[in-house]
Figure 1 (tube, rainbow, N blue to C red):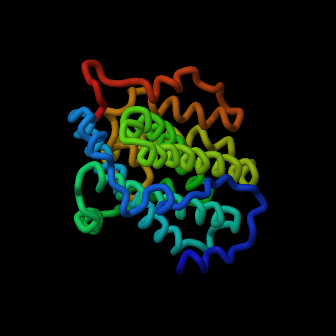
Figure 2: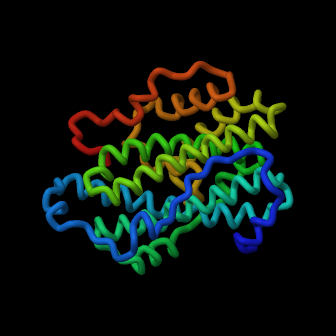
Length: 273
């Protein structure tokens, strides 16, 4: 099923957040970085930004296999949920394309090379199927993923993107804004359509964190992709993320440690890998 066909779904009862921007307007294909700016970049920063992008580019692209899997189960989901997921998928594919362009600028790697790498990825749905049981569990999993990404990209914006001029910096800003919107949209839909199951969220978050720990790897199907970035976060990252989510539903107090999540770094490291 094509994306345009999916848009024939019934109009949302809820007002969703979505930042309207186009990749070509933000970072045109022909855009080049100023050589003088590149000469001023710390080689260590450049190296670590390339490492970061080598993960983030493909993680955003992994929204495609997850989307294709959800398409096979479309009949199970509400119109509201599906309309939200259409917006989510549109945004994630924009992120994929924008990050491909940033990665090419920073590393010199061609789009063809990226395509070959992505084609070789093994996208595993089976290990994370417990997160995809129904609309409710998918929404809670989305909360966890999108909030983590919002905080992660906020850190990346300060640590890396801002050093490469206004165009690359704007890409980073859109990433933060979009992931935050996805989080808020999922919160709204849970409150609107699944109020009778909100009490299940604490246990589901515990199961989600435990699954990430048990797997010890990223299965390349979008969810739990922060497993590949453990060195970028303090050990209480998942606990704080979970508490923020619970606070959205009045199930916990808002944590005081949130600022540490994007300021923390390993001792003796200038840049977190």
